[in-house]
Structures are given as C-alpha cells and as structure tokens.
Image (cartoon, rainbow, N blue to C red; front, side, top):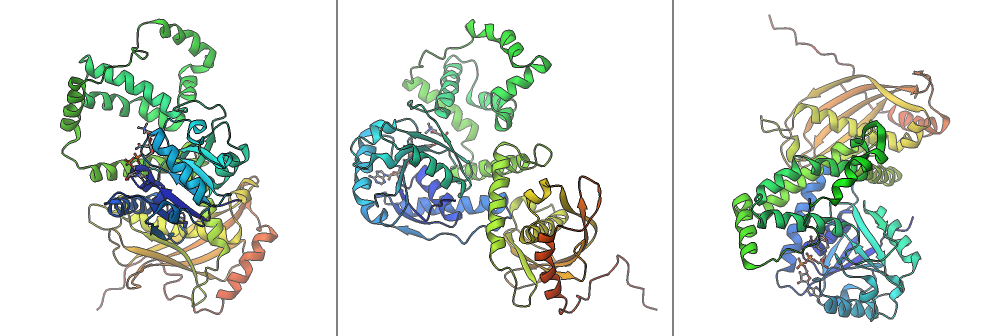
Length: 498
Ligand SMILES: NC(=O)C1=CN([C@@H]2O[C@H](COP(=O)(O)OP(=O)(O)OC[C@H]3O[C@@H](n4cnc5c(N)ncnc54)[C@H](O)[C@@H]3O)[C@@H](O)[C@H]2O)C=CC1
Ligand SMILES: C[N+](C)(C)CC(=O)CC(=O)[O-]
C-alpha cells in the first residue's frame, strides 16, 4: 500500500498543527513553514495534546514518533517530501499564491492537499503548472483524532491523485471520502452551516441561549449522529415500516415554517455581543487548552465505545480505529519482539488519566487490560488476526491468575514481557510480567491458559498449521528459560507463624 514517506505542513495554526501531530504520531517526519512568531510554541502545544490523547486512545504499538523540522521558508519545507498540506488562512488570493509557490518548489510527483473548508480546488489550482496533483483535503478539528478528510478534485485534478491520497490516508488512521462533484463548502460544512444558521436565528430571536442550544444537541441528536449519522438514524425512527414510511410521515413538515434556513442572519454588533457574552457565561471559566482536553477525552471515549460496537466488530469511527490498530499490530509483529533474554516484549504504553481510580493509582481492571492487550499482540505475532477469527478459529482464555505487586501512577510508562511455558499449541500457557519502564519495577504478573477452539463447532481443536508454524519455535525457544517462581501459584494466605 502506498504510504506518506515525508510530509510538509504549510501553515501551523489550529489545523496545520493538527496535521503535524497526526503525521508525527503515525511515524512520519514533517517539515513546517509558518511565519507566525509563536508558531513553534503553538504547534508544540497541539502535539502535546495529541500525545496525551493517543495514550488514552490506543495501546496498539505506535511507530517511533516522526521528526519535526521548523523551516525558515516554504521552499525549504517542501523539499524531498511526498505530501504537502496547505493550511494557511481561508483567503483565495493567499491560498492561490501559496499553492503556486509550492508547485514550483516541490517534487513534481508530490501530492498537494489544501485544508480549505469551502474554496473550490478549480479556483485554487489556477496558477499551478502541475494542477493534476492538487486537491482539497478538508479535515476536521482536532485533525489528530477525527478521521475524516473530504477529498475534492478540481477541473484539472487527476482522479489517480485522489485515489492515491485516499490510500495514503489509511496509513495515518484517516479515511478519505472522495466527493465526486465539486461544490463549494463540499458536504460536511454545508450541513454544519445549516445548523449554524438556524442556531444563530434561535439566539437572535431570544428562543434560547448558547448553553441551552448546546445542551439540546449534546443530550439528544448529537449522540445519535456520532454513531449513525442522519439517514440510518431516521430509518430506525421509521420503525418496521422503514424509510418510505418515515418520509411520508415527516416529509410534509418540510413545507411548514419550521426553519429560517434560507434567510441569512445579520451578524451585526448586537448579535455578536449577545452570542459572545452568552458563550463567555457558559464556558469562560475554562481556558481553551482545558476545553480541548475535555473535548479530546470525550472523543476518545466515544471512539472507544464505537470500537466495540456491532457486537465487537466495531462501528463507524470505532471501526476505523480498530482497523488502524490492527494495521499497527501487523507492522509491529513483523519486527522482532524478542527481548535480550528471549522473552517477548509485547506491549508498551503510558497510564492515561481515565485509568486512575479514587485511590490515585491505576485501577485493578486496567492491569488485566494490559495483559489482555499483550495477549492480543502475541496473537498478532503468531497470525491469529481477524482473518483467522473470521475463518472460524480463535483462542479462548480458560484460566488466569493475576498478582498486583506495586502501584502504577498517572503518566507512568509501562511494558509487558511474556514467557511461553511448555504446551502443545492447542493450549497456550503463558506467564506475563508488567514493569514500570523508568526503573524496571515489577508491578504485576499474569499467568493464563488459553485454548484453541473452532468457533463454528464450539469445541477445542488444534490450530491450523500456519499458526503452529509460528508458535512452536517460540515455545521451544522459551523452554530453556527458568520457569518463573510465581508460575503455578494459587491464591492463598501464607500460613501464620507459630
Ligand atoms: N479551524 C477549523 O476548525 C478548520 C479550519 N479549516 C481550514 O484550515 C485552514 C487553516 O485554518 P486554521 O488553522 O483554523 O487557521 P489559523 O489562523 O489557526 O492558522 C493559519 C496559519 O497560517 C499561517 N500563515 C499565514 N500565512 C502563511 C503563509 N504565507 N505561509 C505559511 N503559513 C502562513 C498563520 O501564521 C497561521 O499560523 C483554513 O483554510 C480553514 O478554512 C479546515 C477545517 C477546520
Ligand atoms: C469552521 N469551519 C468551517 C472551518 C469548520 C470546518 O471546516 C470543519 C470542522 O472541523 O468543523
């Protein structure tokens, strides 16, 4: 699959900074050009937010962070990169001249995306000599978490460039939707604009204030939209009679004067003051960075919930996250995971805020999660991936014993090592240890027995030969290691001294 080897971000504000973080955390080196005197500080703050969010988002093995280079000219920034993302302010003249500069200085084969939220690629590419590789790549804030990119070509854009962009976005955990017919503001911003217009009227007409309006969204249809969008939600609302019935029941309301959508509200000083002061009263007690943190934690929670939607298969943005994680595991499993002493280092992670309990340390079930995630990593390494599971085979854990030996605190880096004890592959007997990275303190051990099953026949069966082929050398390699003292322990009290 085609990948992004090295990227450049022209503009490093809210959106440029978000792209930079997305690229870096996917292991891609990034050059940035932004003449703003505070650009380095601002971008560093976005990257810090993104890193914090990713520690909560996933325990999949992220690649080594890419290298960030601040450049003193646009020409320097676009050298030797194969994806250039323009994220300068939303002015046609400025974007056109910046894109023309990029065009002259960059490798002719490099893809050029514009983050514009409404301008047409056809207008943006007019001064370019190689407009065929330029397209709108419209992202969503925060770019490092939200996966969608609307891809829209102009009259001179090559379809192959859009397809190439779509394929490369997968490798950074995003999904490119190609909008085949070019219109200004594309799809998402048209929808958001409709809501925005209506909302401003509701405030101008004193129907409600900003807080009431936000509550209406977040306590009702906002929750629905995050998981099923508009049409699937309405299909469900139509009940058994379905979409046709829903349209016939609620279609006539479209003719009623429910909306002021086509009148554009006059954003005069009075309305600006009203919206701004209501918003200050609603949210002014929290700073922007604090709001961003809350937003990111919530988004992570929603995406994780969606990851196990549809009975564990993943749904919507959660399915995309699961696919991205599977890709990260595949890449990691190709690299050697054996440690110096032959045991397997399966997982590296940082303890996120959501894992801390009222005792101020990592809560009990997250220890189990560390070992469960490490077990997943082992499975990936021996070929037990979703294809194998969908083919009707899997391993089930039938017994486990966990010891909690020391505390893990917020932000601690941890790692899990595993030793495979003698077994035939139909069972896997593993002994795992969780350590704190800074001082190699042993925090927990976990011994488990897993059984290979045919999920169709509902019984234990031997694994397929390709799995045994990968598992056996690991088990044999570990057979020379001393059996850990704690292996085979049962739960019990030490006998009291006489
Ligand atoms: N803020 C948002 O929610 C979203 C914005 N967008 C689009 O992303 C683009 C950027 O918007 P924001 O990041 O919000 O704006 P911003 O104002 O936060 O950042 C723009 C950055 O561009 C820099 N800049 C100005 N002239 C430049 C030049 N000639 N070369 C390099 N850098 C230059 C500025 O110093 C600034 O840091 C716009 O086209 C906007 O429509 C797209 C999706 C969402
Ligand atoms: C406000 N905006 C039109 C620039 C917003 C976007 O384009 C997308 C988003 O993140 O909402």
